[in-house]
Image (cartoon, rainbow, N blue to C red; front, side, top):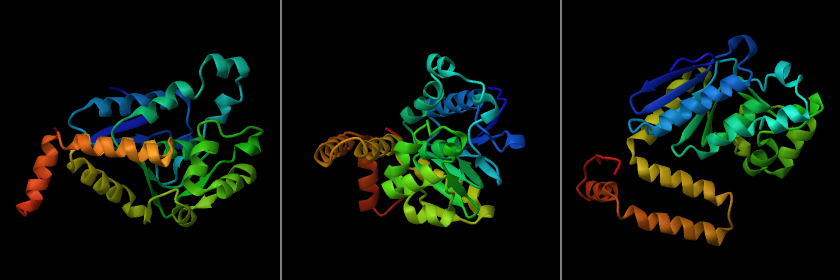
Length: 258
């Protein structure tokens, strides 16, 4: 597949997608998001891929939406065109894990895109913000919904209402990112993590992602019940048998993703 605004690679069982609009700090437009969605869907359907990585440049993961394009839209343009929903919502339905490797700016839509991923690993120069209020509008791709689930209502209100920027250290402390690494090591560390995830049983990894995501959309009792049913179902998999026997036999497990 040819792409205008992204680069796509396979590294063993890891699919790597790099946002590639350097002249505008990877500002997100419809074409770029169409390409990201298509690449993620392709890797999701590829039996040889166990985990995906989404990244940008050292200067910017994505500095936000393409304001030059957005400024031209009216209500009917965004409503009838299903703006954002059309090529953002499908990312939330990707079943395999996605890791965001964030360096530099992740602002507005860039922060929201990172939050659509399952894990965010940040470089020490990463900066996160939801500055839409400065433009006379508000977050529209999940910023007011996913951010408070990650960092608390207080910090989300602070960021969305004041447009305050959060650095990598605070983002880790607040729970937005899982860890912070030196910029020079970001991609290698993220790829290493993705390779580890991809080495495990793919159906089990997918179940874990599904169960954790369910915890944010249900009450505790229903969530635990859902987890328990998925846990029971693992006992029908070949990989559960292999994993437990390998442990007892003190040898590495060789998962077949079945």
